[in-house]
Length: 479
Image (cartoon, rainbow, N blue to C red):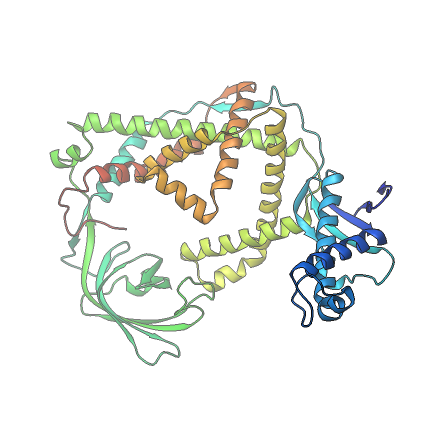
């Protein structure tokens, strides 16, 4: 049902109607006298500044000003009236808006007489009630690091620190490194692009120079030094390199050397890189790191359960236009991610409809989570101080080996600081909800025991930074 604010002297009449999910239609009527007063003020201001031939400054009659500046003045009066009226309508009626009023200024004309009537639509925050925030049921998984996990991590670390050694006999095998000369012929390009002594990693989806090549392993496995291989690639239309985007590229590869990855020996030099004296010390260090990873995983699982509970226990409509914009952004990110993972153009196009559906659902969930957590923060009276934001930035900067002030400057430039602040506030909300949650300890599922495997890359990366000043072997693995 519409809400109306009765007009008084020189006050606008405002009517607010429902216009869809999280959308209001605002109808405004500006009285004729208000238009006349605004017009008089504009001409009075113009009279003081305008230079009219035959008259001293500030002495030109109104009729000449109207003749000379009428169209421009009318437009200025209209814009000021519409802007002030739309802003006041939103503020006076305490509309919790998302974005700015959608006013079509060009389509509205200032009437010669009578009131000025116009309307606009604006999206507003959803109105809903939160569920009970205390005693949310949460399962806490009891996770421990197993001995076989540690052994796998050590093997991965040895490979990460290994050396590419020449393959003495046989042809190219999967995961080998090939040293080759390559020639790229891009469609419509006048000259070929020659690449000498480049490294090509033999994988199902690899790269020759900057060109993504599907089934690269099938092309190269079995080949020997001196062999030449040819293929053609249709580069995706969304590829990040503009010079190749959407074009056909003919590729010719001439193999010069073949190398295989020889894992680093578990010797004193290897152990020293991790600041341990023996294999037992290394295993203990990896156990501690993996345990820390598992604790983070458990915390993440508990956080996800809080989010899921709030999402399932809260029902409200979302602003459709905001959902559409968010879904488009997510779709673009998903397509780029698939491309970077090596999927070909046809594979991505085949999955486009699935991606669209997934991105829309994801957008809805993200927006719903945002509105819920915003209301949770308000109810729990949780805010984030500038000192807290700077503290989180400092910790993140240390992890990434950056200076905190420089990271903050980058966030300001790329517009991510506001989002970072919201995330810090959400984390505080989750921590508060977990304090009062009803937590039940449960045994892990079988798949959960494998979740710490990804830690090895972080372990190796952290240890590698400690040894950057040392001279490393030229053929060390890079991929």
